Length: 293
Figure 1 (tube, rainbow, N blue to C red):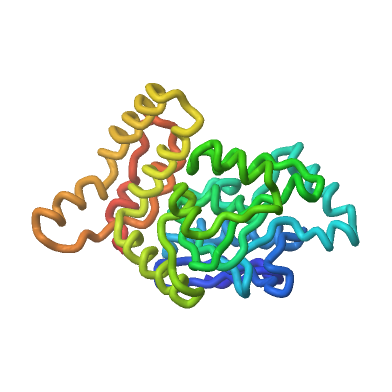
Figure 2 (figure 1 turned 90 degrees about the vertical axis):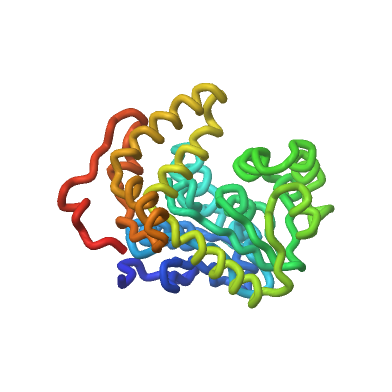
């Protein structure tokens, strides 16, 4: 698939069933600017729409993963802060997978420093890997900014006190990769960036072997449960589970297991991913007999 969007601040490519979003402002430690906001929204939507892409990896070039908003750009052109503030007020921020409601599995591969707005991608990904020299900090209050999205997102991955400490100490303290793993921010550490990218691709390819629709529906149920009381989340997930019994992959999985063969799954079935729980979505006959991938 050829990109319709002309990317200037990131690279978007596909490696088998894995889509990659790579921040490409290494001279600025991949700090976020206005063109990058536009590039990222376009990239998430492009890879989400590509049925051949089953898993998405987000990472950065150079010595830093992402250091949040580009303060030099903001100092030179205060209009950027106005645009960002307008996006916040109108709830139209769209630069992470969660913002764009991407239900495909997302792996965040952190190389080097991850600061401020870079923590958005950690908080909004499903699985986080990092290099051994990766460090994490939230300098918002140290530069006169309020921290909200990142820390609130991280509080469901980490102990509250650890998030609160990172928020309040600001630029004066960093979490090492090992400490971040101990706290639950990430699950895997690799020695260097090359090993990190190999590990991310290998993990993504393992994940890509599963039913794409089952994964997307499962991920959506899990993430939505964060906003619901426990019993309500269980009840809603039960409806999604029952709805999926109508999907051909629900029959293909057991059949493949019984026959001791690899399953052949249908491409992502959007009617099941987008359906409200209990709405009894169905697969069209044309979809059911389509060539499985």
